[in-house]
Length: 281
Image (cartoon, rainbow, N blue to C red; front, side, top):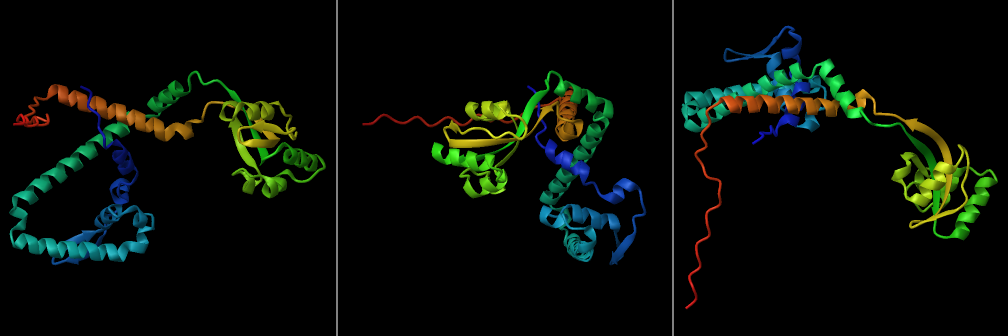
């Protein structure tokens, strides 16, 4: 059975937010001392990295003082708990072992991912991804959507007379793109319903179509531009490719470890059988 490491996204995120002090090898300054226990800059960085996203998006300098105070409080309370022997309780020991194993696992796998995601491997994965992707044409168009053919003819007349198409769309279009001047951006032919797509792709740049009917109503279309769309650039796919390379590396390593290990599963996940219902009297 293939084993899948389900926490890989968290690993990839952690790889991006490792404490600066642990990465750059700079001086780890002492920022406070509590009853002889040193608090270093790296401790503050760790506390900062553990904050919820809405706080960690702020610069660490803005939170430095409250983070130090948080660490001071933690050290004071934990020291008192040790004096009372709480660190010897089974549940504390069990959680400490669990936390240590989790940290060792993540650190090992992060290094594994870093070693696996070389430039050569990433470029090879990119070439495999884009292989067979043929260049396709896409167009950039605006449209004005109205309910009746008569309204569409009136729109066409005003547009041909030189009125600004975007302003007409803002005034008249009932479609969701109306407030932005009817702008649909670039799209492929297969992304639109056939009557609309055929009309849009047949236009010359700057051309305005005759009214065309779809299930949504009547459209007048203006073609803004056309271009050939090639494969997506490497930068656009880099994050996805790295996740795939990382997942493959982690799965391979975990399967290797499981194959070479002696593992005994001593539990039965099968649901207990329902007790038989006695026959009715």
